[in-house]
Length: 529
Ligand code: ME8
Image (cartoon, rainbow, N blue to C red; front, side, top):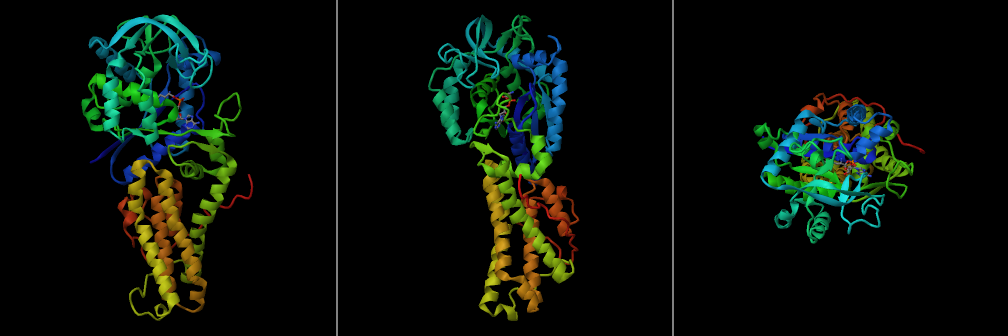
């Protein structure tokens, strides 16, 4: 069985998750569902990054004493888990960097690299950004401000351990150049290659306990803890059994995707592959850095008061609307602007008007003209009298086009989703919805009913219902709850979880004679915010 191993970043537990964090997880959940439908052995891992100065400070600020950080992080982790549950995340494993086996894995890595002569000690004179948990050199500091987040840097002058990453620069450049799918999107690869034009500085991988003690102790020097990034990146292998469980490790490594935001590109595409290479392990297959959600034209921040709480949005508009909006609004990889107005606009046009309306009007007609029973396709290919007219021919052509486009969705998903082109996949699905809605307008079923062209009317309604089944299954990775309600309304008894990807491309699976269950509109129109 093919495997598919995909990860999210491990989020810092200094505050509650916001829409940005949920975006990454929804993207990973969606493509994981797609591969599960295709029968892959999927391993989707997410979790929390719990060490370092930022968390230590947050713990103290919460009123806890030094040394009580574990109590603090234990209090925040359930907030993440609850949100993921609420969003319907089907992750296979939740890793915490305070887990015992992870701590042991980090120490095993440090011991190996130390033994191999890859780690050495020297005085570190430079800067540190606590919010970014990143070291910056004198040249990189912008008048004492962080070049990334523009906040104040802390000056450091202390002995520390360093990992000789400079030795691997040429290897990394070669690897990036010869593996075009290693860093995605392509413009991010160019950004990393640009960064690698300057000589790499060895990476400081420790913090002195005198200044900061909330971390994994360096196994060969108890006066130091591990730098939080060095600790956290190792989760991608500790979570699948490094170092002891070689069978699991060999099963899942290399990861198929690390999905991250653009903010942590360098850590994942420079430090991490070099760490792996130094350990004698292969780099991940693809690191995909998605874009940034901004709110009211600015980066979300507590001080600006523009942080969007996913729970509030979900409670108001529903989980599937939220998932749909995030993945449809912006091509994955680019930045996007989040606003309730934009969400309502998409909801009304794509959900209420397009898909919701198609289901509703189709089922209404099945009830009105066929007593709620899925009709049989009749008359196709035979010299049925209604086909003799031009209008009749056009209607048959319209139905054929719908059938072809609907059954072709399997191929479209196969082309788009392995590339994480979520919006591209949704555009293709909505093309089918739009063709179906247009077919209703063009075929005028109410006229067919009046003229008693029952066979043709039945064929038309069957085509619409069957396209709805295919559309419902195609949107499953994105909007699993909507798939379920459409299937229920179509009268399909088989549980969605049992359906297969091939069922998308197989026209005719909906059985004539099935009783439909029309219920409330899926997405009632929203008149105002
Ligand atoms: O960086 N738009 O954790 P973090 C889109 N612990 N995505 C966003 C976002 C936004 N406005 N804000 C956050 C860390 N994200 C480290 C990672 S991994 C071994 C260690 C998402 O809590 C996006 O995925 O700051 C980003 O990369 C991540 O949250 C940063 O989360």
